[in-house]
Image (cartoon, rainbow, N blue to C red; front, side, top):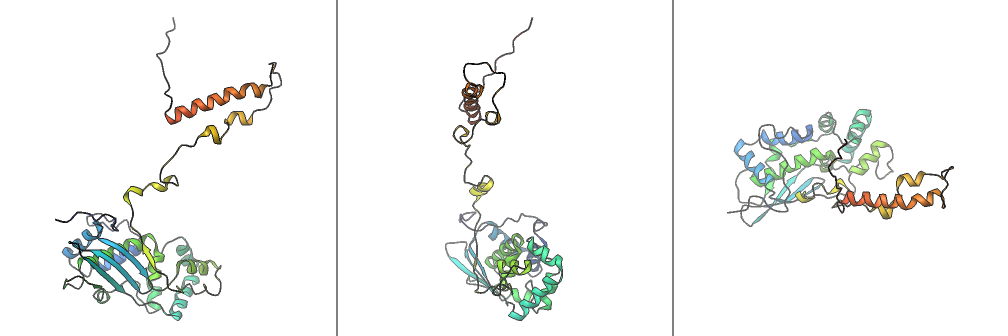
Length: 288
């Protein structure tokens, strides 16, 4: 019997149920819906299960090609490859001109979103943004399955939809655009080599798995949260803004006298914060 989840694999975040793609952006949903319209429900479910169990070990995207390694039900690993037509230089210029034509297109892309009109813009340039049923049947897997789309192929395809939903520039990179060059070209900061927004030289993008143990490690910018020692790094706040008291009649200057007490108060507060000292609360006194 095989393990339920493959440790270290790239796992799908889609939930089960009919609305499992609702959390994706429109282009991610459109990508996966193209697959759902081309296969039966049983194969769709098996492929989604393969993706959720982390069977996809590696996933790489480069202009015109997607490559992945998928763990089979036993110990054998299979290679999955998707081929796509990339945009020619002239077609890239045409797409970029349309993006620049309307400020809202550029605004969407610069905000990390894909305008709904992108599909029409690509069609005008002679390329379909989303695969057709015929192109899906050309996807290859080295497993012995005789089905046009095996479980491994479906799993990789669904993970691509999620990756594209998180970053639409990955979808554009598949057809030959480079993210940084495209952003600079749309924002008017590109030099001559970046003006077209194309991927020159071709760039390979690797999709990394998400470590469940590290999901929240960036909340504090490090792998673990450590309370800073305010006794060494920071002076007591009130003491730092105080001035000499004009009517003070002590033997020593006012600030010099209270400095010791503020330092003790800071140490006491730090120990309460870190749990080194417990605040003892007694019973209230009775007033007769």
